[in-house]
Each structure stands twice: as structure tokens, then as C-alpha cells.
Length: 318
Image (cartoon, rainbow, N blue to C red):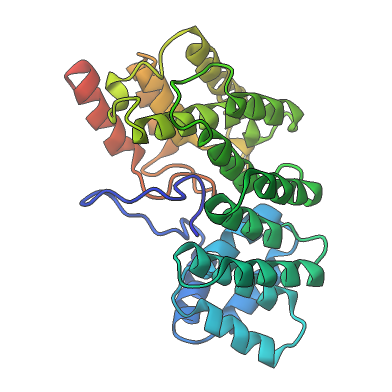
């Protein structure tokens, strides 16, 4: 299990590899301690996360990635029977193992449901069910898991990104359809979200996810610069709406501003292939050396390097 949206995407050899913990130093510390067999730091981290559901989901996903995370979670359960945090970590670790083929999906799902019973308000066990259903379940199972997450946290970013990926993968053999259900889903979610929600960029996420599926099926070039997927009136409207949203909220008042939560890497990529490299360069300058530190960003891509490479392919210069 990895933060969205790179689920199922292999890292390029020789490319940049960022820590899945991103800029969450406390998470990185707890994860490293867990790998050494010490679960107390993970317990303190999750207790301090409280009901920040997006952050909790990300932290659980990263903590569960270690090979020994399931064993550490069981030790934690023995020491603190009934701990919802230990149960949630075990559920996420079980899903990670099931996705990798090292555990039965039924066993992983049972662990998720056990965690959900201990913490009825927590969407994280249902997020784990959604991750599992994405790899091993049916369309109905994915939809039910997503509904359970959304019932507990309506604007859960990881779940929305993951559901967009699930929907984009339907009809793999078809050419791109402007009426594809992933676009409808993304538009609906963006309309339902609060005005300051990063889900405003979900239509761009849907556009990128659909391109990923088409490229994997050989229906679009692997190089986006050679694809028409990012061109055309509809694509321009989607990119413009998302970019305008970002500009509207682009202020720096020293607070945890909503623009820090948006997946700016999508916007940078989109603006470039819309034929507007100057805006892309300005956007990347504001992003900094990496994409947004939020858990739903691309942790395994450096947008500056991607921009430079795409500029060379598209315009002949960086």
C-alpha cells in the first residue's frame, strides 16, 4: 500500500525515489522504530493524530509498508488488547500482504472489519478495504467500501483518488470517451466538496488516471507529449478550472493553506501539455523542489525534472 495516486505504478529505474513518509518527520521516525521492533512510537503517533482522517490514513498506510509491521501490530495488540490503533495498523498491514500475494484477501478483509468494529467513526479500516477491493474485489465491493469511507469522512482525499483509479480502469479496451464514468464521478465529487477543498482538482486526477489506463493498454502513447489526451476543448476546460481554483487560493498567510493540499504535480503536467510552459514553470517554482507534501501527491516523481524532460520533448528546450 502506498499513498495515492501511484498505487500499482512501478518506479522508473534510475528515477527519483522519495520517501513515502514525505515531509512527515514524526511518521518517518515511528516507521523506522517499528522496523526495529519498537511499536511505542507508532502508538504515540497515531494517538496524536486524532481524527485528522486524511493524515491518519496516510500514516497507517506508510507504517503498514514494513515487512514486519503485521508482527509488530500483533505484539501491540497483546500488550494493549482492544486498541483500535493497533487493530487498524494490523488491518492495513494485512491488506498490504494480501495485495502482494502473501496473505488471503479474506483474512485481510476480516482484519479490516475487526478494526472497523473497534472504531466505528474511523474511515481508515474502510480505506484499507477499498485498497483491497481495488486489487482483488468486484465493482460492487469497491463502491460499498468507498461509500463507507465517505460516510465517515465525506472529503477523504485518498479514497477519492483511489476510486478515480478504480473507475478509470473500467472498459480498458475502449478509446477515451469524454462521457466516461470516471469524469462524471470526478465532476460530481468536486461539486460536492467545500469551496476550499483540494477535491476541486479531482477532474484533473481523473483525466490523468484515464490516460494511464489507455497508455497501459497501448491505446495512447507512453509519452504524454505525443498524445492527444491532454489537448482538445474538454481537456482545456478541465485544466483551466483546476488551475483557476489554485490561483484563487494562492495566498501565503502563514497558515495551513488549502493550496498545500492540492496535487500540484497534476496541474504542472497538465499546463505543460496544454502548451503553456511559462505557466508550468511558474507553478513549479511555487511548488518547490518536490510536489505538495500532502499524502495524496506523487511521492515518486520530481516535477521539476519531469517538466524539463517534457519541455525537451515538446518544445526542444528546457
